[in-house]
Image (cartoon, rainbow, N blue to C red; front, side, top):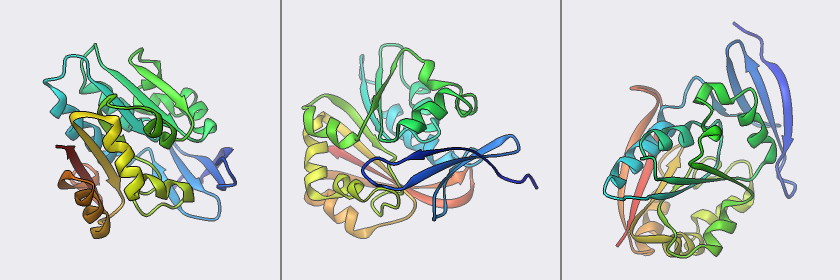
Length: 224
């Protein structure tokens, strides 16, 4: 077994702790200092599905505009670009500047260097800022932030999944647009909040690695 090698650290803004990038043989892992592993380049099946399930439903859009909250290791962005046409625009908001640099460096190759795609636009900052300022701007919003509604790395992420955050997402979506949310596990209260925000809700179980690995959940919430 390859011994993990610490490559770099990155501070989470607003005293949110520290992320650490490790190399494990041919793979990489991102961990939070004092906590567990957040993501690994071996297991990204559910992140791929988040983009695939959502973006394939945008086939009728001639110039789809998509917002992704959370760059991570770039797999969600790469999958979204794969399933969208040449006229699409994908805005990816990443809170931690170091994560963007990692994706432009050693991590990029694993996901196919999606940041080099001209359809991808990087916003270095909180995705909440985008949701609060954009109105009827996106055909889909994909939230792959933290660990889902039960955040681990940044307490302010809780706003995204609150009634106020869901109202902002609703306003940022175009008519018929979709909010897709990745989560490490189920959260019945979040399902209730989505319905109270007047979304049409579907829950899709996915696995971390193809048909194997940990079970995760994706909410698909469509604006009526």
